[in-house]
Image (cartoon, rainbow, N blue to C red; front, side, top):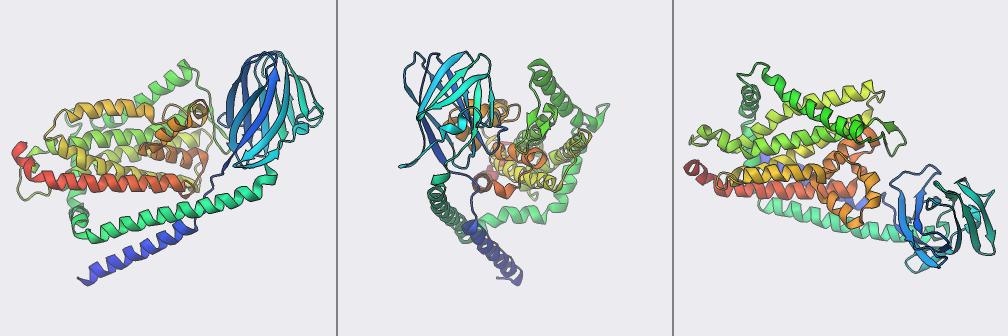
Length: 469
């Protein structure tokens, strides 16, 4: 083994050690959940909502809805909320009614803590609306409401359960981190054992980097050669798409401004473009990368040409337009009064994530499409479906309250969710990528699997490319 290879392996080993240290010492910021149970009786059937948060200003996504049957029948209402909530707001339907709330409690596993119902009574409650009266009678909260949006707010939370919840969270966090570390170590071990097979493709790309860049420039220039406006068309089509989506959703459907988790309100068009910019890049990469071998048939048939560089040539060609739209996005945010801060540099990290994910997918698709031409049509359909399954035009934080948790989980399993959400974390939510530890770990595992499978499929099929094309 050469000295250079020894240095590379030593650096990889050091990286693996540091990654293990980071994983094992990482503390998840996610809170556990508790159940809020209460017995409700009233003379009107309606939807009862429980909002939760750490201030009297509640986000639309932070609520749980349970339907009450009415008829003055006692009904146990069960709401699941984060354990670190310190404010609760009870929304009692939308009509004039009388309600009786009793036996309110927090439940964490087998532990119980009473909810302080007197905190919701008149003169004590932090905020109320359309409430005629709220008073305590023994251990029962009696509430009279008016039509409209009756709600009552109080500062209360499962404080007595805090120590037990913290211990359980610490234990669960350690178990989770150990599992993550084992997965990461197994991945490194597999890469080390089969390093000769896995390193051949990256080595080819590095050795031919100057040729790749030159071909990418030529590809970008010749794509629109012969047209009057030339490469300007590469920027016109995505811009028109943004304008159309903005007009349909904000003007036509009345989509309002979006409030970030930091409390700032952003115009819908700024929120929209931060999701469309990565999506346009992924769409161009998937379509262009899939057709790379068929577009460059004359190069595939050359015996001495390294055809493994063609998918990344198409991806770098699409990257030129992507960088332009990143710059445009930053300018639009600046003109909107939202000047970029340090967290904006994460856009480069998420662009790299998208680059690697797209490359892995394209190595598989460009290989298969040579033998199965219908794949191009299937990919077109997948793109149409995925643009709606990825929260680009709709806000998962708002609509998530109306969806079952299993459906939200499915949406988050889509690797493009991590990318789109990451761009918005950089531009709007102001969250560092390592604060999304679970999603980051999942994304890179999935991307690694796609890359290894794509490289394997490409290597096995490339000997037949010239004959088939």
